[in-house]
Image (cartoon, rainbow, N blue to C red):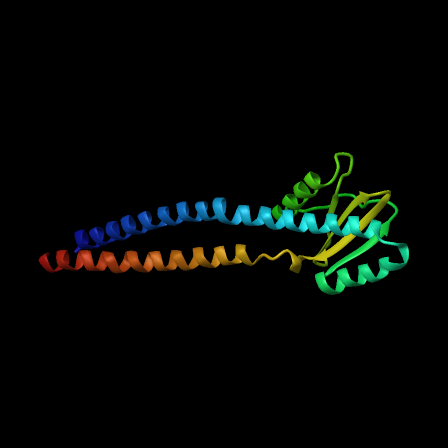
Length: 182
């Protein structure tokens, strides 16, 4: 009976290893060629929106600025205010915010440095100078969706479970005739 179990075990391991290698390669390709460009595009779009909002704000007459700030907050979930000095960078490891920092650096003039801060209450701050003002943007982490990353983790977990189930079933089907012969 020992050779049958050994054959079954080897078959399960071979099929599972092959499918897991396939999943790792597919996961890498998904991350590299789908999620990363999607995150870069999203960060670039948010950077463009922040810079456009800053330019619009400084060009508006002073008496219409409060209405613009209210509309920005109400319709886009982004708060805007003027500050006298920019906050220091205080970012924990957050790949999306690193992409946003790079996108803001590309869109702002060379001497302008965007400062990003992540607070414990689930909000981000982006400060950068614009036309003599230092503008302070505050937005929620909800604006920066983590849904694609959660979807990848769920897909990988489901794929691993299915892989192991398929490996088990295939190994049983392959080893059943050998067990009958034995």
